[in-house]
Length: 313
Image (cartoon, rainbow, N blue to C red):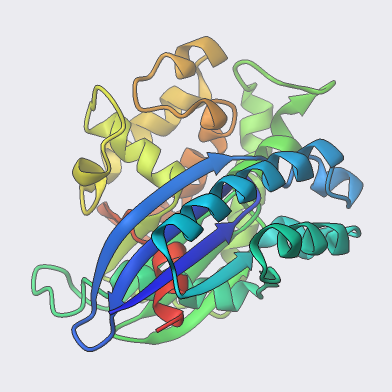
Protein backbone atom coordinates (compact mmCIF):
# COMPACT_ATOMS: atom_id res chain seq x y z
CA UNK A 1 0.00 0.00 0.00
CA UNK A 2 1.13 3.52 -0.85
CA UNK A 3 -0.43 6.45 1.04
CA UNK A 4 -1.08 9.30 -1.37
CA UNK A 5 -2.83 12.67 -1.41
CA UNK A 6 -4.60 13.85 -4.54
CA UNK A 7 -5.98 17.36 -5.00
CA UNK A 8 -8.29 18.27 -7.87
CA UNK A 9 -8.76 22.01 -8.28
CA UNK A 10 -11.49 22.76 -10.79
CA UNK A 11 -13.45 25.81 -11.85
CA UNK A 12 -16.08 25.47 -9.14
CA UNK A 13 -14.66 23.21 -6.41
CA UNK A 14 -11.41 21.97 -4.90
CA UNK A 15 -11.31 18.41 -3.61
CA UNK A 16 -8.92 16.27 -1.58
CA UNK A 17 -8.50 12.51 -1.41
CA UNK A 18 -6.03 10.83 0.94
CA UNK A 19 -5.95 7.09 0.33
CA UNK A 20 -3.94 3.90 0.59
CA UNK A 21 -3.58 2.42 -2.91
CA UNK A 22 -2.58 -1.14 -3.78
CA UNK A 23 -1.76 -1.30 -7.51
CA UNK A 24 -1.38 -5.10 -7.37
CA UNK A 25 -5.03 -5.63 -6.42
CA UNK A 26 -6.56 -2.41 -7.77
CA UNK A 27 -7.86 -1.72 -4.27
CA UNK A 28 -8.11 1.82 -2.90
CA UNK A 29 -8.81 2.47 0.78
CA UNK A 30 -10.16 5.96 1.32
CA UNK A 31 -8.89 7.74 4.45
CA UNK A 32 -10.25 11.22 3.84
CA UNK A 33 -12.28 12.73 1.01
CA UNK A 34 -13.57 16.26 1.16
CA UNK A 35 -14.68 19.10 -1.07
CA UNK A 36 -14.97 22.87 -0.81
CA UNK A 37 -16.79 25.13 -3.26
CA UNK A 38 -14.33 27.96 -3.98
CA UNK A 39 -15.43 29.21 -7.43
CA UNK A 40 -11.85 29.68 -8.60
CA UNK A 41 -13.25 30.32 -12.09
CA UNK A 42 -15.41 33.25 -10.97
CA UNK A 43 -15.49 35.69 -13.90
CA UNK A 44 -12.64 34.04 -15.84
CA UNK A 45 -14.76 33.58 -18.97
CA UNK A 46 -15.39 37.37 -18.98
CA UNK A 47 -12.13 38.86 -17.61
CA UNK A 48 -9.48 36.28 -18.41
CA UNK A 49 -8.13 36.60 -14.85
CA UNK A 50 -8.54 34.81 -11.52
CA UNK A 51 -10.33 37.16 -9.12
CA UNK A 52 -8.47 38.06 -5.87
CA UNK A 53 -11.35 36.83 -3.70
CA UNK A 54 -11.51 33.54 -5.66
CA UNK A 55 -7.79 33.01 -5.10
CA UNK A 56 -8.13 33.66 -1.37
CA UNK A 57 -11.03 31.18 -1.06
CA UNK A 58 -8.91 28.59 -2.86
CA UNK A 59 -5.82 29.23 -0.72
CA UNK A 60 -7.94 28.92 2.46
CA UNK A 61 -9.05 25.46 1.31
CA UNK A 62 -5.43 24.56 0.51
CA UNK A 63 -4.38 25.48 4.05
CA UNK A 64 -7.10 23.21 5.43
CA UNK A 65 -5.97 20.38 3.14
CA UNK A 66 -2.32 20.82 4.09
CA UNK A 67 -3.27 20.11 7.71
CA UNK A 68 -5.14 16.93 6.77
CA UNK A 69 -2.29 15.67 4.57
CA UNK A 70 0.25 16.26 7.33
CA UNK A 71 -1.92 14.57 9.95
CA UNK A 72 -2.48 11.45 7.83
CA UNK A 73 1.14 11.24 6.66
CA UNK A 74 0.72 10.94 2.90
CA UNK A 75 3.96 9.95 1.19
CA UNK A 76 3.22 11.62 -2.13
CA UNK A 77 1.07 14.59 -3.17
CA UNK A 78 -0.21 15.55 -6.60
CA UNK A 79 -2.17 18.75 -7.23
CA UNK A 80 -3.97 18.92 -10.56
CA UNK A 81 -5.50 22.20 -11.70
CA UNK A 82 -8.06 22.29 -14.46
CA UNK A 83 -9.95 24.64 -16.73
CA UNK A 84 -10.01 27.95 -14.84
CA UNK A 85 -6.26 28.11 -14.18
CA UNK A 86 -5.51 26.99 -17.75
CA UNK A 87 -7.36 30.04 -19.06
CA UNK A 88 -6.18 32.74 -16.63
CA UNK A 89 -3.61 35.46 -17.38
CA UNK A 90 -2.50 35.57 -13.71
CA UNK A 91 -2.03 31.81 -13.28
CA UNK A 92 1.51 32.41 -11.90
CA UNK A 93 -0.02 33.99 -8.79
CA UNK A 94 -2.12 30.86 -8.30
CA UNK A 95 0.91 28.58 -8.78
CA UNK A 96 3.03 30.46 -6.25
CA UNK A 97 0.27 30.39 -3.63
CA UNK A 98 -0.29 26.66 -3.92
CA UNK A 99 3.47 25.95 -3.78
CA UNK A 100 3.84 28.02 -0.60
CA UNK A 101 1.01 26.17 1.16
CA UNK A 102 1.35 22.56 -0.04
CA UNK A 103 4.96 22.37 -1.17
CA UNK A 104 4.09 21.16 -4.67
CA UNK A 105 3.39 22.97 -7.92
CA UNK A 106 -0.10 22.67 -9.35
CA UNK A 107 -0.01 20.78 -12.63
CA UNK A 108 -2.17 22.54 -15.18
CA UNK A 109 -3.07 19.46 -17.18
CA UNK A 110 -4.57 19.32 -20.64
CA UNK A 111 -8.18 18.39 -21.19
CA UNK A 112 -7.07 15.05 -22.58
CA UNK A 113 -5.07 14.31 -19.40
CA UNK A 114 -8.09 15.26 -17.29
CA UNK A 115 -10.14 12.82 -19.31
CA UNK A 116 -7.67 10.00 -18.76
CA UNK A 117 -7.64 10.57 -14.98
CA UNK A 118 -11.42 10.62 -14.95
CA UNK A 119 -11.70 7.39 -16.92
CA UNK A 120 -9.24 5.56 -14.67
CA UNK A 121 -10.92 6.75 -11.49
CA UNK A 122 -14.42 5.92 -12.68
CA UNK A 123 -13.84 2.55 -14.33
CA UNK A 124 -11.01 0.85 -12.41
CA UNK A 125 -13.57 -0.87 -10.18
CA UNK A 126 -16.03 -1.52 -13.06
CA UNK A 127 -13.63 -3.59 -15.15
CA UNK A 128 -14.89 -7.15 -15.08
CA UNK A 129 -18.40 -6.18 -14.03
CA UNK A 130 -20.55 -8.42 -16.22
CA UNK A 131 -23.73 -6.38 -15.75
CA UNK A 132 -22.33 -3.35 -17.59
CA UNK A 133 -21.69 -3.47 -21.32
CA UNK A 134 -18.58 -2.01 -22.92
CA UNK A 135 -17.40 0.30 -24.26
CA UNK A 136 -17.94 2.83 -21.49
CA UNK A 137 -18.51 6.52 -22.13
CA UNK A 138 -17.28 8.46 -19.10
CA UNK A 139 -18.50 12.06 -18.91
CA UNK A 140 -17.08 14.42 -16.30
CA UNK A 141 -19.26 17.56 -16.18
CA UNK A 142 -17.12 20.16 -14.44
CA UNK A 143 -17.47 23.87 -13.83
CA UNK A 144 -15.64 25.10 -16.92
CA UNK A 145 -15.36 22.06 -19.15
CA UNK A 146 -16.75 18.59 -19.78
CA UNK A 147 -14.52 15.62 -20.53
CA UNK A 148 -15.69 12.76 -22.75
CA UNK A 149 -13.80 9.46 -22.75
CA UNK A 150 -14.66 6.22 -24.54
CA UNK A 151 -12.85 3.02 -23.73
CA UNK A 152 -12.95 -0.52 -22.46
CA UNK A 153 -10.18 -1.35 -19.97
CA UNK A 154 -8.18 1.60 -21.33
CA UNK A 155 -8.91 4.92 -22.99
CA UNK A 156 -9.66 4.67 -26.71
CA UNK A 157 -10.60 8.30 -27.43
CA UNK A 158 -10.94 11.43 -25.33
CA UNK A 159 -11.94 15.06 -25.77
CA UNK A 160 -12.48 18.05 -23.51
CA UNK A 161 -14.89 20.81 -24.54
CA UNK A 162 -15.57 24.16 -22.91
CA UNK A 163 -19.05 23.58 -21.54
CA UNK A 164 -19.51 23.27 -17.79
CA UNK A 165 -22.09 24.29 -15.23
CA UNK A 166 -20.33 27.52 -14.18
CA UNK A 167 -19.29 28.58 -17.69
CA UNK A 168 -22.80 27.98 -19.10
CA UNK A 169 -24.44 29.78 -16.17
CA UNK A 170 -22.18 32.83 -16.47
CA UNK A 171 -22.43 32.92 -20.25
CA UNK A 172 -26.20 32.51 -20.58
CA UNK A 173 -28.04 32.96 -17.29
CA UNK A 174 -26.37 35.97 -15.64
CA UNK A 175 -27.92 39.38 -16.33
CA UNK A 176 -26.63 42.53 -14.59
CA UNK A 177 -24.54 40.44 -12.23
CA UNK A 178 -27.34 38.15 -11.05
CA UNK A 179 -28.54 34.71 -12.15
CA UNK A 180 -31.99 34.93 -13.78
CA UNK A 181 -34.48 33.31 -11.43
CA UNK A 182 -35.76 31.17 -13.10
CA UNK A 183 -34.10 31.26 -16.57
CA UNK A 184 -36.20 32.43 -19.52
CA UNK A 185 -37.05 30.09 -22.39
CA UNK A 186 -34.74 32.12 -24.64
CA UNK A 187 -31.82 31.77 -22.21
CA UNK A 188 -32.38 28.02 -21.95
CA UNK A 189 -32.55 27.69 -25.75
CA UNK A 190 -29.28 29.61 -26.18
CA UNK A 191 -27.58 27.47 -23.55
CA UNK A 192 -28.87 24.30 -25.20
CA UNK A 193 -27.53 25.45 -28.59
CA UNK A 194 -24.10 26.07 -27.04
CA UNK A 195 -24.11 22.59 -25.48
CA UNK A 196 -25.15 20.94 -28.76
CA UNK A 197 -22.32 22.72 -30.60
CA UNK A 198 -19.87 21.39 -27.99
CA UNK A 199 -21.23 17.87 -28.44
CA UNK A 200 -20.69 18.21 -32.19
CA UNK A 201 -17.08 19.14 -31.43
CA UNK A 202 -16.61 16.21 -29.03
CA UNK A 203 -18.09 13.81 -31.56
CA UNK A 204 -15.43 14.73 -34.12
CA UNK A 205 -12.89 12.72 -32.11
CA UNK A 206 -14.89 10.57 -29.65
CA UNK A 207 -17.43 8.01 -30.92
CA UNK A 208 -20.10 8.99 -28.37
CA UNK A 209 -22.84 6.83 -29.90
CA UNK A 210 -20.76 3.62 -29.82
CA UNK A 211 -20.84 3.51 -26.02
CA UNK A 212 -23.03 0.92 -24.31
CA UNK A 213 -22.72 2.24 -20.74
CA UNK A 214 -22.80 5.93 -19.81
CA UNK A 215 -20.87 6.71 -16.60
CA UNK A 216 -21.45 10.18 -15.16
CA UNK A 217 -19.07 12.00 -12.81
CA UNK A 218 -18.84 15.17 -10.71
CA UNK A 219 -21.20 17.35 -8.73
CA UNK A 220 -23.87 18.11 -11.30
CA UNK A 221 -24.40 14.39 -11.96
CA UNK A 222 -24.25 13.30 -8.32
CA UNK A 223 -26.68 16.06 -7.34
CA UNK A 224 -29.15 14.97 -10.03
CA UNK A 225 -28.79 11.41 -8.71
CA UNK A 226 -29.44 12.49 -5.13
CA UNK A 227 -32.60 14.30 -6.23
CA UNK A 228 -33.73 11.30 -8.30
CA UNK A 229 -33.23 8.98 -5.32
CA UNK A 230 -35.18 11.33 -3.06
CA UNK A 231 -32.45 11.34 -0.42
CA UNK A 232 -33.09 13.30 2.79
CA UNK A 233 -29.42 14.35 2.80
CA UNK A 234 -26.40 13.84 0.54
CA UNK A 235 -25.24 10.22 0.91
CA UNK A 236 -22.23 9.14 -1.18
CA UNK A 237 -22.79 5.46 -0.47
CA UNK A 238 -26.31 5.60 -1.89
CA UNK A 239 -25.35 7.74 -4.88
CA UNK A 240 -22.23 5.76 -5.89
CA UNK A 241 -23.11 3.32 -8.69
CA UNK A 242 -26.78 4.31 -8.66
CA UNK A 243 -28.44 4.04 -12.08
CA UNK A 244 -30.69 6.95 -12.99
CA UNK A 245 -33.09 6.50 -15.95
CA UNK A 246 -33.28 9.06 -18.76
CA UNK A 247 -36.86 10.02 -17.90
CA UNK A 248 -35.85 11.05 -14.39
CA UNK A 249 -32.92 13.09 -15.68
CA UNK A 250 -35.27 14.87 -18.12
CA UNK A 251 -37.82 15.62 -15.39
CA UNK A 252 -35.15 16.92 -12.99
CA UNK A 253 -33.53 19.06 -15.69
CA UNK A 254 -36.89 20.66 -16.52
CA UNK A 255 -37.57 21.22 -12.82
CA UNK A 256 -34.19 22.91 -12.25
CA UNK A 257 -34.72 25.17 -15.28
CA UNK A 258 -38.14 26.33 -14.10
CA UNK A 259 -37.52 26.68 -10.36
CA UNK A 260 -36.40 29.66 -8.28
CA UNK A 261 -33.22 29.96 -6.26
CA UNK A 262 -35.18 29.37 -3.05
CA UNK A 263 -36.87 26.25 -4.43
CA UNK A 264 -33.56 24.74 -5.54
CA UNK A 265 -31.88 25.67 -2.24
CA UNK A 266 -34.61 23.82 -0.34
CA UNK A 267 -33.74 20.48 -1.99
CA UNK A 268 -32.13 18.34 0.78
CA UNK A 269 -29.15 17.06 -1.26
CA UNK A 270 -28.32 20.45 -2.81
CA UNK A 271 -24.95 21.92 -1.82
CA UNK A 272 -25.27 25.68 -1.39
CA UNK A 273 -22.53 26.22 -3.97
CA UNK A 274 -24.53 24.37 -6.64
CA UNK A 275 -27.88 26.14 -6.27
CA UNK A 276 -27.22 28.61 -9.10
CA UNK A 277 -25.35 26.26 -11.46
CA UNK A 278 -27.31 22.99 -11.20
CA UNK A 279 -29.77 23.97 -13.96
CA UNK A 280 -26.93 24.28 -16.46
CA UNK A 281 -25.23 21.10 -15.21
CA UNK A 282 -28.42 19.04 -15.43
CA UNK A 283 -29.05 20.34 -18.96
CA UNK A 284 -25.56 19.27 -20.05
CA UNK A 285 -26.24 15.75 -18.73
CA UNK A 286 -29.64 15.61 -20.44
CA UNK A 287 -28.19 16.72 -23.78
CA UNK A 288 -25.48 14.03 -23.56
CA UNK A 289 -28.07 11.33 -22.87
CA UNK A 290 -30.20 12.47 -25.78
CA UNK A 291 -27.22 12.62 -28.14
CA UNK A 292 -26.01 9.12 -27.21
CA UNK A 293 -29.41 7.49 -26.76
CA UNK A 294 -28.45 6.39 -23.23
CA UNK A 295 -31.42 4.98 -21.32
CA UNK A 296 -29.68 5.50 -17.97
CA UNK A 297 -26.58 7.01 -16.41
CA UNK A 298 -24.41 5.01 -14.00
CA UNK A 299 -23.32 7.54 -11.38
CA UNK A 300 -19.81 7.31 -9.94
CA UNK A 301 -18.43 9.10 -6.90
CA UNK A 302 -14.99 7.91 -8.03
CA UNK A 303 -13.63 10.19 -10.69
CA UNK A 304 -10.65 12.35 -11.63
CA UNK A 305 -9.60 12.54 -7.97
CA UNK A 306 -9.25 8.74 -7.76
CA UNK A 307 -7.44 8.72 -11.11
CA UNK A 308 -4.94 11.27 -9.77
CA UNK A 309 -4.42 9.08 -6.69
CA UNK A 310 -3.75 6.00 -8.86
CA UNK A 311 -1.22 7.98 -10.92
CA UNK A 312 0.95 8.29 -7.78
CA UNK A 313 1.38 4.52 -7.35
